[in-house]
Length: 189
View 1 (cartoon, rainbow, N blue to C red):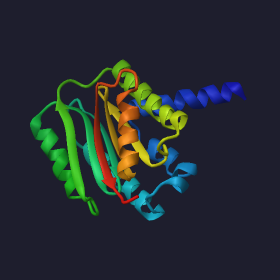
View 2: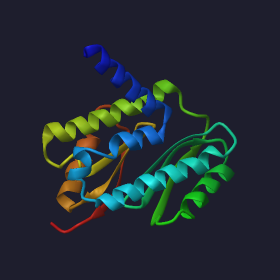
View 3: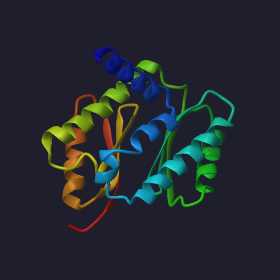
């Protein structure tokens, strides 16, 4: 049993590092996180569809590209590294053209693709932030999507002002975090 658990964990981490959205989305699309999410099941499904369609479009582009696409309540965040401004613009335009996309924040950088060790460190930062949400119990970890790229932590979710401030503080005070970018939709208390 322990051997199978280790194999599952290693597979999951590798999928995260390699950026396989179908596996990541499929793994996170069901379970307690969906039940506790403030989005409706239909919106969660649409976010998954947006991510898959965006990924399919990016796969057709040429060059040394690493991207992470996250859709939360139809607001799309694009992170990673691309070789040119032209490819960055093409990705933005492709995603904007997808059905039901409300907005696109493209924080792609024009530089060589990050190493696997840099991506692994980003994955560990994301895990640390999420673990602190559970530990500190100030804001539900199910209300906040955490994405890390180049030690910059991006926070997405549907929160009230107090929850947003708590989430930002937790992320800011997590080891190795260089910067926090809040991309919240705000609701009344």
